[in-house]
Image (cartoon, each protein chain N blue to C red):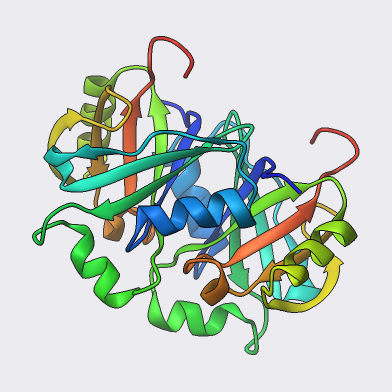
Length: 139
Length: 139
């Protein structure tokens, strides 16, 4: 284990549509990817590229989304999680378990199509942390 | 104006010393830079490098730090702001003012020694946003 790329910053929003307008018209993002549903995580997702990383816009999908509570507390949206890449997800999971860190649910396929898991923010200095296996090809 | 590099994610912490231990021993960061005081912003700062970006650990410096309130609400710390690079800070300031975005205080020298300003999170979809003029040399 070593600290890998900051793959993305997850930013919750009540509306990906209005966030796309914000990133296009105010932040002048040059690459905004096509939004898609990620039903396993109960979120709708849209990646906005910066030259070196990505913003992952996430909107609740359904009423029992894990984002519902976050948006109740932060109606405008806001920073939700940080995602770091690792070369091997199983090795990383065993590593963090060995450190006594709580892992939230099973390893599953994330928004980039590679396996991911989340670490409990209370064990990570208040930062909900996603660990993601790097894609085989650069995105 | 176009969306520039994600220079860093600002992460508030009650103790940079314990956060350095976390990033060194748990996250296995290979490059953790020397902490320093930034009295203008009333914060102590420490940069942790990822291969493509940085985490900026920030701890309150003095009792009237802008972080005091944040840490009262988030005692463990947590994600505080996102910082994007621009080539020209004056042009960027005029651009965001023209968009009707509230700017928090004057343009000032930031943690990387280049001019910065902050945009109000309520005008930025809940994200406290730092705009930073790119260093002339790669850091």
